[in-house]
Amino acid sequence: CIRVETEDPDPNDPGDGTVAVPVSDGNVFNVRIARNLITRCGASGIATFPLLAVNSRGEPAFDAVTVERVLIEDNEITDCVRREVAPLPPVQRLFAGQGGIALGFALDLTVRQNRIEGNGSEPSRIASGIFVGYGEGLRIEHNRIERNGALAAELGGSTGGIVVRMAMGGAEPAQRYSAQDTDRPALLVQGNVVHSPAGRALKAIAQGPVVV
Image 1: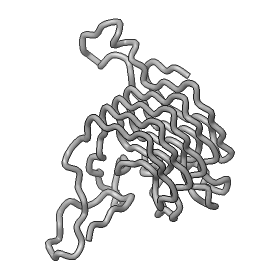
Image 2 (image 1 turned 90 degrees about the vertical axis):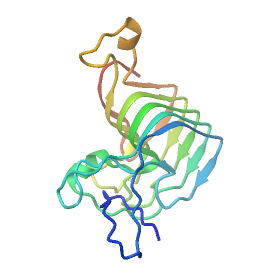
Image 3 (image 1 turned 120 degrees about the horizontal axis):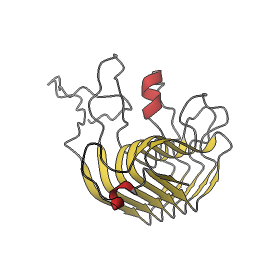
């Protein structure tokens, strides 16, 4: 069988043939997820393996799955994150999220015209409408994001409407750049309807141009 957990896996297969742990084979490019009804999932509606700084043993974590040039458009994502998630150490909690959409590492991401509602609404569930651990060139536009995450969720967790732990944009450091490069936003958020009784509508840390 294959086991997927929100914990950094050990890529060294014990060889006993009983449990296989999936390991990323590299970045994922040119992804389009459109016009789907995604509902009642145990975990997040759309997700990648979480970005973890350290594993549960305090050792450096292996790289998260990186997605690049991604369009998530015109989906209905409702009533996901139904099962309890194992508690994470404080450092892991910063960059690992659950929710309607939860991506650990995303480059050139567009999320637009989606309805993301009621994910993680059970008591004690930590969930966001949209969560990104680390991103570059993020665009979140014209989505309806409502009632994600429970009021009783643990403080300090990734609960809210839109949660971006770190976004980077502008010109690449120590490289030649044009005026167009410097205008590349780290994060663009516009035209969304966000109702988040369990946390902030938007919580983001960014370096570079930001448009809200």
